[in-house]
Length: 150
Image (cartoon, rainbow, N blue to C red; front, side):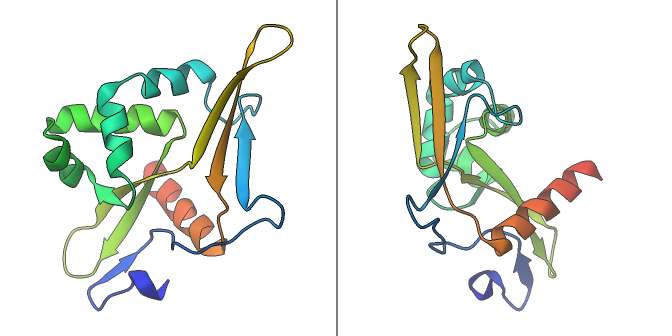
């Protein structure tokens, strides 16, 4: 976490460490996961030009205002697209706590690969591969969830 701590701010953003699960190095979830997003929601977000533009910019955490400036979109459009991407499970939201000013909400892409297939019954399947999270990442997610509930 030392990469994200400054004299005037404490970042609750996950570090970019390479924590892996011995075999694949990635965490997976599928469309069958009751806590995961539905296939139509993911497809709707991937079909949206603005959502794809935002995803391409999220190789590192960014605020909504940074995304607005880089995408040349209105604030309301950026927030709507970020909400759709969060519902799709493709973007994570974090809070950076600052001692010298207001806290800032940052967004980060939360997948490395999406696979969509057709099963034997003619139905569609989906799996999303995510980088494995470590304890520091889970704590950041916990605090972001606490912020949403307050």
